[in-house]
Length: 279
Image 1 (cartoon, rainbow, N blue to C red):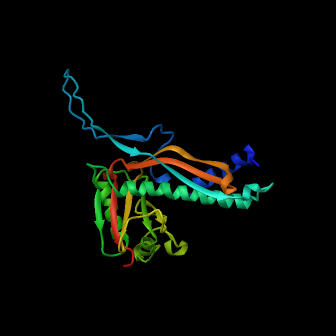
Image 2: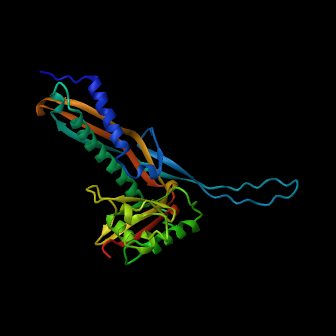
Image 3: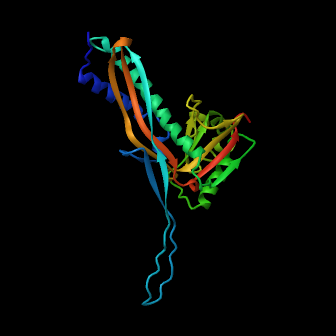
């Protein structure tokens, strides 16, 4: 016997997944996003700096000859499928649908984050970080300040700056007296157990992830301090779902789909900070 699922149920489930997906990824709001991309690649345009020149009376103007180059993001297809029989019920429990929606959305959100991390970890040919700051200690105030100084030397505005670290790095910051002491800053880190913003950076703490997470070698973690404009995320299919009856499985297949790719647009807006998460 064929199985038919009402369009209302499919639409409701798709809405639940999309809502959960908006809250699942940590890095999407920290980079430049281009939606509705057609094709398998997207070229992020980078405009070089201009130099004003003096003009004498009646002379022709001299063009600045601003250079233009492109950073190309390659889009890939990602799926988050799961078999379930819960749609067999006449009335599907909302909590069960919400749990499945959250599971699918979270997996795609993590994948979107990993695309961004991989783009910062592997730079296109010809690009170089503003600086690579290496310390044998854990993440601390002095290291964070070095990252801020490196970006300012590159002319990066002190706005829309982000830092992505992992739990060990958060521990290092919470153990740093200058960062956690209210006499030094207005972030009550030891009260809330987290660091939100410090030295101009909004901190994003990444948990250990099966997708890879931040690159690690032994106890040394590669974290990234960056400007929003320095990384681009191109999205062709911005998360949608299909729910289909699979006869030979006698189950419904719920599948979340995402087509996206990321690239470093300008690595001079990125500082790689390497720290020992156990120090």
